[in-house]
Length: 333
Image (cartoon, rainbow, N blue to C red):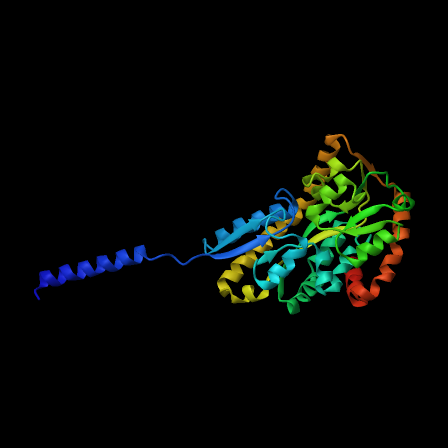
């Protein structure tokens, strides 16, 4: 074989190899299905969008996050089982959802008047207590990544709710939580467990008389359009735990997990920063709507609510755990 032929064959082989490499399909991205039950234009919805953007950017496209908002993939009662089975990889359920799963300690967050302000809340969820709580999910096959805040709850109803006696006989929608059940029974109301996606129609048709939620959830789900009154009470808190299927998470390459941790940290900072702004804007939107009367409790009225609901703490102490309650009390000081 002469030198010219050898060079020609070498060039041909190089060209064929390069062409084959160029035509070889790239590795398929790792897909993370992220399901949640609220609208996209809420603190959680926007946090999920931010996580998707960061995760895909930081991993150079090696991860693709598919978002399913507004219960479009799974409803409240279905999503946790779907996560454990691996049908979906990521959720951000409200903290009340973990009680029915068997992690009753999370129901401590449902206790009325547990946090005096946002600073106290942050100390509890973003510090050692928060990490301790997330670790309790691992025996259930769940890896907890972060706490996202949605803010403080207000009451909506079709009658004025100023003092505890006003709740007597009212049918109030709740999440599935023994603590929330006890909260409403403490003021004479009849709690009704119901999926979030069903609340608007239930309020519209009178199946329930009222509910509690953050202003951003009330406004984006248009609940105010079927409620005559809204009481600014700040009596409780709604937060979410961003969670993943542990088996899925542990199977990811270490460098991918590191980038996703970074994406989660940055999106958590973002979601928690906008929560109060979103709630303030929602109250303004409801006020602008003009057909829902907004009333803010006076200090004396709020004190009556707190006194009426105080026995719930003692009643639920054994359920949520004395140690859990003591750890939160210490964190919020």
